[in-house]
Length: 356
Image 1: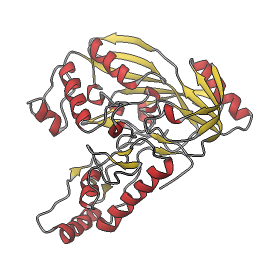
Image 2: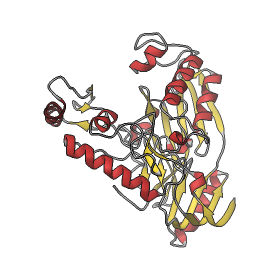
Image 3: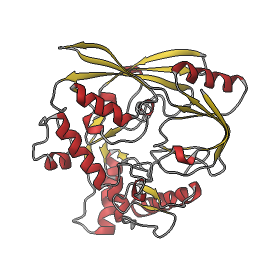
Image 4: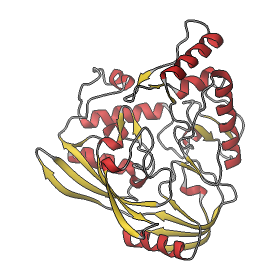
């Protein structure tokens, strides 16, 4: 375990904004992770647990407390069975994309469409990471945590994690620190059924088809690169938190009201995307709303914070942005979409010490 005073935090995040931590603790084992959090809690110190830093906007003033950086490692094959598949436990600090690569190399199917997503494995159940028709909840078997309230290790089965779209039991509270995530993978060389139209088109196959795992990964990485969603230190379009807003989920009457506003603003032939929801609601596209509310790719340039030139859902740091710059732009976009269409966009990344 390493400890550093007045440690810069911006380099530990993909957005690269935020001030220093009064104390930074780098935990390299599960025992160190629990110990660092327990010690800070016992001292009454504010605690921020930081993984890969890909889904967080840190404040310019920094963190006046202890930041515990999760650097634990380990991918353990618990069991492999031709019928049940592979049960694999991953330490919270493992790079998520490294885990995806490892799964594909081992012939473990179920997370290949989540290739290229930055950040650590421990963060994936928190926001139920998803992309290209897959969600991590589809393969999670259990999540092992440190319960800061009870001061004990607690393990949650997948059904107890309250997974919903980009949400979980763990997202709205700092009570639980994710220690390990166990996955149940299907054995085989083929992907899960392709569930995203653009991905199927790129693979020259049909929705619902299965393709070799490596081909699925390559296609996903190409899609993400085209959208500026694969980290590249030289490309400011990738200095982001990925999608800054979640896709709105509306009741049928709310969607009908949105459709009426779209017709009034854009004409009778315009139609917002609609996707069926398991609960009878309608999911629509935040990117579609943002663009048609007057915020195209590159909006905000040449300012320090701007919408990505490749994807309207990403707010990017053009090299000298502050957290205040990022949040100001995010509020401008949110308010503009509400004014145009009556839909309130919700931020996907965690905003430390701030809210939109």
